[in-house]
Image (cartoon, rainbow, N blue to C red):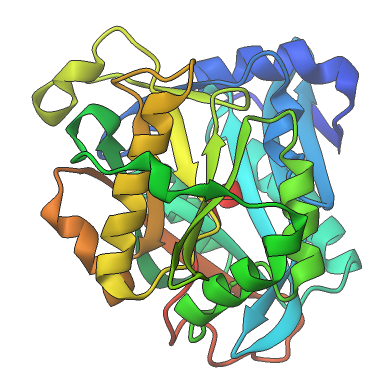
Length: 343
């Protein structure tokens, strides 16, 4: 086989069109094959993070690979630590198994380690054998099984949207308290304090953020969720629209993430889903076939109340990597919080 010549460098805004074209060619060959459309801005995927970097592999004929990382502060064992989230690894079909992924991965790891995170992690779709093999071959270990449950808004039972009120800056403290209490034993919780929650939400402005909502009982906030319309960032097209996916034939899915979420127990999760769907039905841009997307650890009983509603599950494996050599040993032994921005 002829050696492939390429160089790895940091991506720039001038690469946007080439990156969008590359992304469309890179089908995620998982249990349910999907393709993505990131137009008009490939880099919008990274903008919810305060610190991120994208690297590309450039061959004689243009871009043939890409990968990205973001530095975040997350809770591990209740303590805030720096973590590197690794994502968006793509290689052009004709350049696979020629060292491109390894070259981009080396650049990502070197840059990530320069920021001195304690751990690195990545999420890989179930059935995506090439990515699973690549990630494990570079020292990451599988830690948790996770889900992204998709609920068609037109199939979620009715609830009264008048029970909701839109939350403002003054509500961030109780909203953060609710979200933290609901996930108090979870690793990777990405809002160690109220300021970092507020910073994340402000970064979603212009990226489809619909707002933070909550409901009350006896004058106190008892549940909250954010609605993030992901379509300005990325659309997903199912390439085998049959069976439970038949309704999606010929259309790009419009994902509406519920995030961040704070609610009292599993019935509270079901209540949040109903209220979110009720709110979406009121929006002028609402599409009756768009889906509410709820990410969670598969073993998390907090989300068990959602099982009563019809859903389409996507499965992921969380991989972890000790980047600091300190053996952050308990990472992966507890439930994890799946950050919508990581998907």
